[in-house]
Length: 236
Image 1 (cartoon, rainbow, N blue to C red):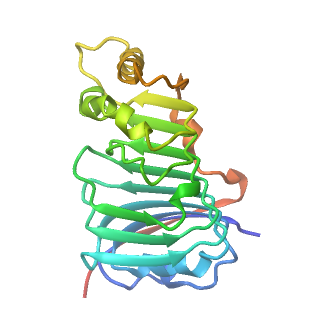
Image 2: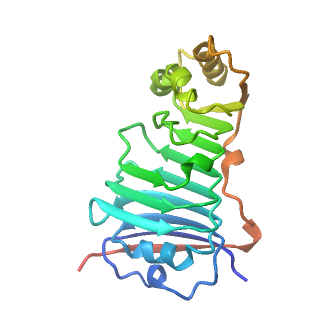
Image 3: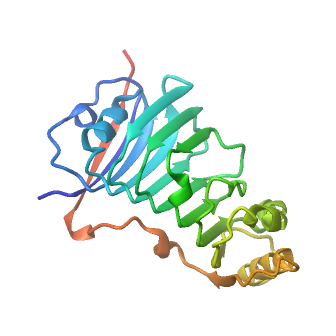
């Protein structure tokens, strides 16, 4: 039985049959591009009760200022990324057993997606990519992963001591430099030095480790995954 599904489409209208379909079996893993009219919402709604992993790539959604309220009783892993053309959207999620969260931007800018989790206090693993370190909602955090360009993340890393005060159970910080200038040799080593410098004086025994992108793929069986690509349709 199909349990993992990836849907990539861009549509300026609601005429997207695959997105409206309610014939999907109970999905456990869903990766979906959220673009155009809100037809993509129905896909998520149709399998919200069975999903354990959800990956959302949010672009130019319509209407602007969308507020999406969903309940995910089985969700354990959530990934929300913004493209360079992301519109304002508010995600209000009821997630009683959520464990890990990824929040990221394709390019550094002011985030336009507001993520509100009902049980953020139970999240133990958090990955932040080019977004500010807002850790107050995650008091039980044990692992924090940081991704971004060296220069664009420097100010955020210097704010780490204050940010981790909200996370008394934090045990490890994992890091990865995504871009650098010709003046910076071995950027991941420089990233580590910057984090070490920021953590001096905190008296916290927090381990540091470099990681690779493969470490943050959503759980799921690639042997059972189906990818559907829906072409751009014109508004009428």
